[in-house]
Image 1 (tube, rainbow, N blue to C red):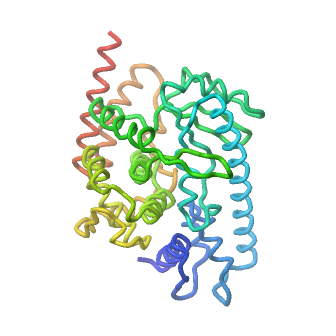
Image 2: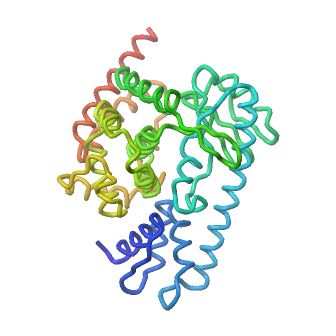
Image 3: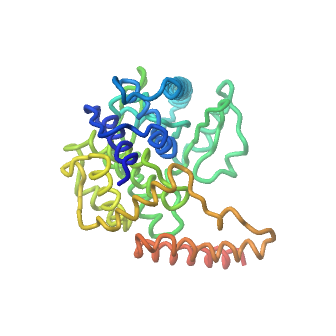
Length: 368
């Protein structure tokens, strides 16, 4: 591993676990912080860098840039916190008890919650309360929306200036009927039957069950990998969640969910990176396997190249005009996605291709 990458992970591990920082050699700060920005972990690393003394400290100009990034992140948190509390209070007054997904729910598990970077609020209200919740939340001061909720997919977007809130009718959408049914069962248990209630700024706030927090955080990272590119921020979320809930999880339940969704190979491959790059203890990584080292090495290269939301997919960008050409483009895209994924996870790639083909043909015949 190049020196700058070794230094990047040393800083990231120290930030994630709040442990003493051990760095070898002169820090290549420009390269290290380029990695950090690409992976959406620059605030975590900036906090560590500002605590350093001696010759390995960054330059004054870089320290100033780090302070600015941390200040902006803190202001984002304060604004999002204000919006979240107002939204949840208003919904609860109307007998709707939303569940907080991601965001602050994950940040609370970090050693310093203010250092986790995120820019929106995800509130799950479910299918039954979805339209009423959207109607209620549109009365909040300063909000505006881009479209009616009838046109929304899995969530409806409400904007508060530069701060978006996603109101979820479902926590995830899957194309295959069988996978969708399995996931709905997992969702029902994690978000309804066994949801947790925590104190958040004096507010009783619902967050998912501990098992669902782990599963969903990984599932979210996995879907980013499949679509927009995954960064070390999302993988760090999984590691921190596993660490925070170590010894409190129903491991059999987690195993059942991962296997039922055909995700054990991806889970173990991401887990290998969490243990060997992020420093998560093997004891805290359920179903850890060192046998996937070769696959993990390929995954590592993809993550370093793609980063957080930065996948370059020319095929998806260059969509043609015309209904017929768009259909052909979508059909070819199924096979392009297959070959992109098959190098790492062949069985998952084959299953995804079959599911997408079945779904496409089913929609075609339903229209007729």
